Image 1 (cartoon, rainbow, N blue to C red):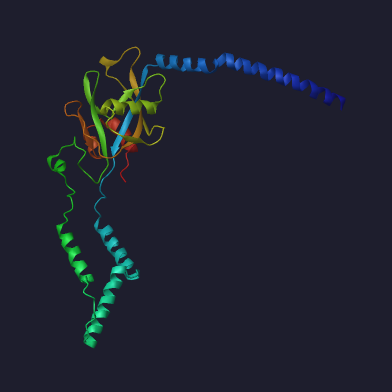
Image 2: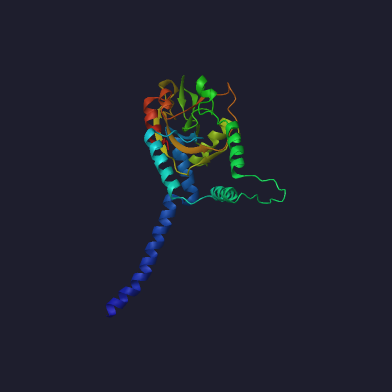
Length: 284
């Protein structure tokens, strides 16, 4: 019993001494917060890969897609079931009351005194509504940009997602890519993607970013003519964002750009790049 108590008294100071030494050694080995930040900066500077934040900017659909024959048949069936099970609306009740009133007049051959007030029957309302409906002309689903094949316009393919692609020069080659910017020390990769949007539109576009984590990743090497000792390639982190409201178009001639659907993107992007981008493009 004495040995156990003695060991217990000695164990506590020994544990505190050992823990204190390990804590001090850890701070000295990893340098605390300041040295850790400096170490990450030096590692980034020594890396032969450039870090890029890319913007996956999409314009959401403005119209619902046209229904297939099966969907149309199902929609008509559901509508018919709703009509059969629904209650009378106020207008339908009014029509029934007017029919009963007119029937009583025919049977009794009496005219009710309306006090000189102008009577507007339900049928009169329906006729006026029918005239207003004939004046209404819905906007066409196929726009002028669709007819002209203008892929720089946002006013096209209104029932699909559109993706922004820009042409950038890498080495001596011009390739189509998602808008991107090189990472700067002290900023997050999402901030890099946000800066790419600002540099592209000059703060004229408003977009909603979907989270702080990247939705995709791609790594590629620069052409041999563009490789240096400090940069042999790039690691690209994609961040998805949705274009908000109606935005002004990019000035023509400032930057080659297109708004394309998921299927059309294959006409511009390199196969390896397109394979990575298509993984996080979803049409709903």
